[in-house]
Amino acid sequence: MAEPYCNSYYAATANPAGPFSRLEGEIDVDVAIIGGGFTGIATAVELAERGVRVAVLEANRIGWGASGRNGGQVTGSLSGDKAMEKQFRRKLGDEAADFVWNLRWRGQDIIKNRVAKYGIRCDLKHGHMQTAYQPSHIAELEDMYRTACRHGMGDEVEMVYGADLRAHVGTDIYHAGLINRRNMHLHSLNLCLGEADAARSLGAQIFTDSPVEKIIYGERPELVTARGRVCASKVMLAGNGYHHLAPGRLSGLLFPATLGIVATEQLPEDVARSILPQDFAVYDTRFVLDYYRLTADRRLLFGSGTNYKGTASDDIGAPMLPAIRKTFPQLSGVKIDFAWEGQDGITINRIPQLGNVTPNVFYAQGYSGHGIATSHIIGEIMAAAITGDSRDFDVFASARHWRFPVGRYLGNRALAVGMWYFQKLEALR
Ligand SMILES: Cc1cc2nc3c(=O)[nH]c(=O)nc-3n(C[C@H](O)[C@H](O)[C@H](O)COP(=O)(O)OP(=O)(O)OC[C@H]3O[C@@H](n4cnc5c(N)ncnc54)[C@H](O)[C@@H]3O)c2cc1C
Image 1 (cartoon, rainbow, N blue to C red):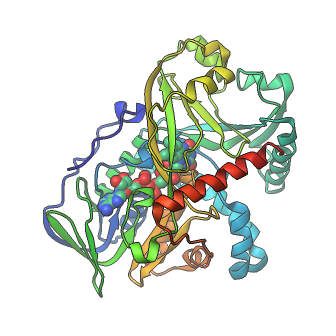
Image 2 (cartoon, rainbow, N blue to C red):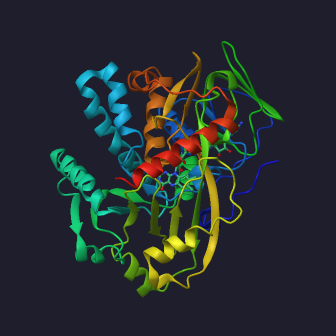
């Protein structure tokens, strides 16, 4: 039985989409995708645009996982960028740095163009500010600023210091900010639903309430659900932190971390304008950071912290309220209307994992908390690989990943210890 959407702001304000129905009976397609989040749906759009017969099987509902629960911040800050550059050098040599830099911004273009092309209503807005939480973090932002300028983004980035920050974010807790006008924020569930409708309009078959129970490998692999079966030339696993398929090949590689997030009650217009006068999305420079933005109906959507053990919280809002009050004392009495959490797949080196279980069964997963833009880039790369151009796929697939052959429970605990260590180190930053 499919699980309903969690109690999120996104689910409460979702656009009508579909209808999507359960898979009943047997179908035959070129490509079958497991998972109806951004990775699965973005790949389906790309494939359908290329004329490929594609089916998506989603266990619950479209955007039910991390894709319909996140902070909605479409950033160019790739998780694992340094590690990528280092590892991709083996395949690309000196071109690795440019490859990673261009990758940063590909997701923004894909999303912006798709939203325009298919008329997706998802409250898309431009503008981010990354804020220095400590004076010692300012140099990092300045370094990013200079790098962006060197790459021709001088018109889109700006450093702001001291009292000038107040024109962008109504708090005194930060020491500097890097504005990035190329980055965006949006209603992520409505983006995912809109993309699913776009894929459908191109002939993709999208099934919900259809958990894949088994993959039968072979020349034409088959996906088995409780009431149906899909036979395909190629299969792609896009279940990210929520799936347990292909255990032999994939176990010990990906660890689902739990991220909590809240949406306040609607704020009066003057209050909303006082905290985020430019309607930017904001995130700070810490390893485990606060990130927030206003929704279209003027709620503060605020995320903070990551539970690397991957377990559910008893009270999601509890750590969030003090963080909100510390950032914006003027919101001291604000009420939380929605509190929810979701799981994202964390990889140890923070590089997304792309590869094959068998030659015709692909997987893509592990964006370590930065998945909106990345999943769209990966969708493009996977669709290209599945249809015969595997240049970018091969670069990712060549990356070496740590594997903890201890099962998810112990692996998540080891990850939690590792991240605790990094957070302690951060105090010295
Ligand atoms: C609280 C939170 C805040 C975040 N904030 C941001 C942010 O602001 N910016 C950003 O860039 N990233 C953010 N992320 C990360 C981002 O949301 C994810 O990286 C991205 O959505 C992952 O997309 P996905 O499609 O790979 O996985 P998911 O969206 O999790 O989708 C996987 C889907 O697969 C389905 N599935 C699993 N097993 C099966 C099966 N056997 N059969 C069929 N279907 C199956 C699941 O039901 C699920 O719907 C956040 C994540 C969370 C949880």
